[in-house]
Length: 460
Image 1 (cartoon, helix red, strand yellow):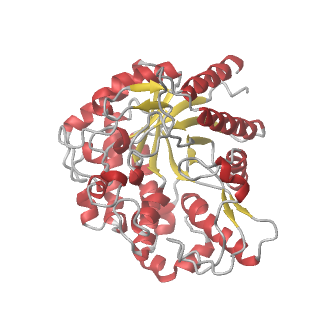
Image 2 (cartoon, one colour):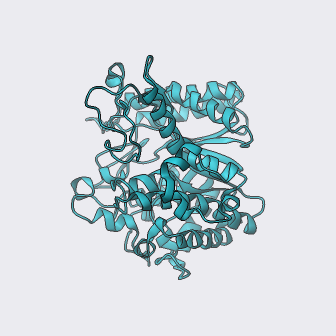
Image 3 (tube, one colour):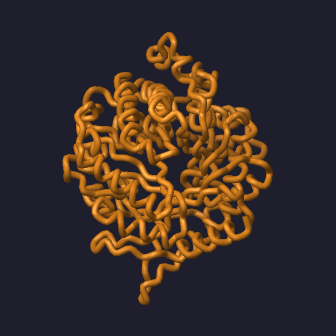
């Protein structure tokens, strides 16, 4: 597979999932500190207090990145490590840590790609309403500006928010993510405010570093409608696609949300969408980050099937079957997601077709959870992850060959880590982590990924 000469190969992580040192050097509590310590919220009572201890071991982890052969590292900043209460109170020890990390990456020949927000909102901001409170948009803008002033001389590419759909819908509607709330009005407010926050942060970053490149990362999927499905299944597919795939992109491209959602959300959206917001939402992108793991499926409802609203967190009284087709059950990952590699290339082509003015795309997360650990000789033979990565990268390559401007790929994840509500029960890493000893072991997938990177560079 030949890749463009400027194509970047990377791996991705998030602060709360790997850093640990949760109460060290002035770091304040985030909503994930609170949520993970609430009984029954996280599997096995796990927390991110120690995680992968990256805070103390980042130099070792950078050496592993060098061994992998990656030239870009996408990581998030811990807002509460920099601003413990989410406001103007700075914690210089936090700035010192990220300066050391950034400088060490650059010295190793690895580009730092920063995500400003990967779900760890400062708890004091949640105490005043969190993302359902419009004031959080202003706090995020100020935080973005401070980060640009501190790190913008060395960081070219910035991602404002990671997966704001998860922030709003998983955090405020069905409660499986922090802060664990279950309120539709707060959910729609959070969805709107994260869109406003992306635009506000983009302007703040550009004001400090005019030449920097700014985008947002959204989690996306293809909704595959079953052959012969009824009209209600197609209606469900459009609603779900609008809610997950189109909400944030339409916002920063046009200043408007999908019409079907404006109608469905009604007064909940009218209450928070203020005069002038259409202009405030627009943020000309430098790129779009896409997190892709698998396709989703929509079929005609079976007798007795619940509505989308009854199934969890979709506020739509529409019946549909969202189960995975039986022929894909054998491919399930440990997350019970099917393996659908063609979907990545199809999604990239769809994005380029529907929003052709976006300058370029980056696959900012792609990976699979499998439990494979070291055998008696210390080798981690994660053959299923090898197959997953190889086939998804090939699918991405087909999209590039078809003219889609994809400029980077970040495998999820560099390390086995704290997988949110699953705790340490799900392993996505290219590198195995023993969470007792903190020993790192490169998996077979890491060596395969290195070989793909080397081959792509040689042929480019």
